[in-house]
Length: 100
Image (cartoon, rainbow, N blue to C red; front, side, top):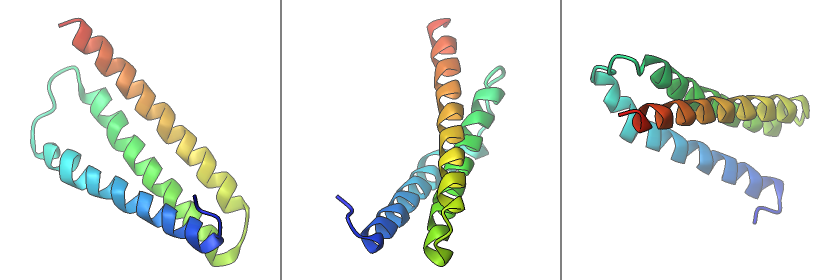
């Protein structure tokens, strides 16, 4: 596990790279396709969830620039909001798929 501040920072940077790579490689290219009718809200929640998660990583990394714990608090709130959006999208998608 990450035990020093340097290791923690590296872990956050890696998480950001992995999330970004997955989004760019798998989801963003989908953006060139037409979102099926009735799925726009789900699509928007997925995109917003990614954006918020990425913003939370940026906020966590800001802590390492000035050691202000407000960045940790803000990043945690943003990350939790991202998770709520992801769960909302998952629930909506599951419901749509079950109704097919």
